[in-house]
Image (cartoon, rainbow, N blue to C red; front, side, top):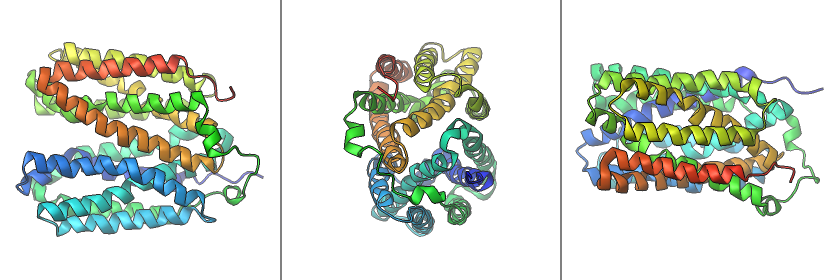
Length: 382
């Protein structure tokens, strides 16, 4: 008999983990600025957040794959992330902030790819239902990103660590409630070796494609708000556009369980990449048009939501069973880690050259290269 899916335990972890991201991504740099750090210092502290994504997911996946109880590493990482974040309550000088960020980034970025592997282990052949669970993470991000703005305006932006620590504590507590299904602990001698999987051209093309896609998002994560502000959009309008993108992402996550059983994940990836080329081109060339910016943000449904769900499908196909822990570690290390660093560097360099238009056209160009790779990405059975 198949094990019953612990839907709410899985969904709760996604919800609470992404509340952390909803508080961290929009507001943490502002908190660092409030401490009096220079732009260079803020940039290096934030760069550690992305830099640890390159190291910690693959390293954690090795530890997890060798463990007879892999969920223990998830539990350890979640608790360590909360404890290390508490250091921001006391750290004020540059060196202390670097040390705390290094520890926090290492643990916080290690646990999500391992939880993705855990979720796919529970879903098994029903992995097309992944979007129904992952949508709760997007909801958590949206609620905190929208709610912490007014909250911090009321209590002061320097209170950010104090109001974020409960989110990390809740994430750690929910992590302790989750575990792998019993069959995940049973060794399967029929599984291929990791190096044999990585030797396949289709796998290498896929991993390079997600690296390029994340790189193409660099201008969006770094300069989108500034770019639109420079072309006459008010702060409340820009906030509305951010929220619209997340809402579109949630809706497509809920819709993907109907799509994935009918359409090959590789074809979905191709469509998402083509749409993202169009999206960044619109943002680059027509930022003054509110109607086109609304349309571009609605495309976030495909650029992020459908793309991520299809990537989870692909990882489960390429890295079956316990290999999924390695697959998730590689996916996060290359995309969010390497792609995040490359995207930020690319965006910064192009912004110096030609402001938002150059940065977003650069993102569109990188995404076009990823689309060309996706066109040649074979099915997993080849």
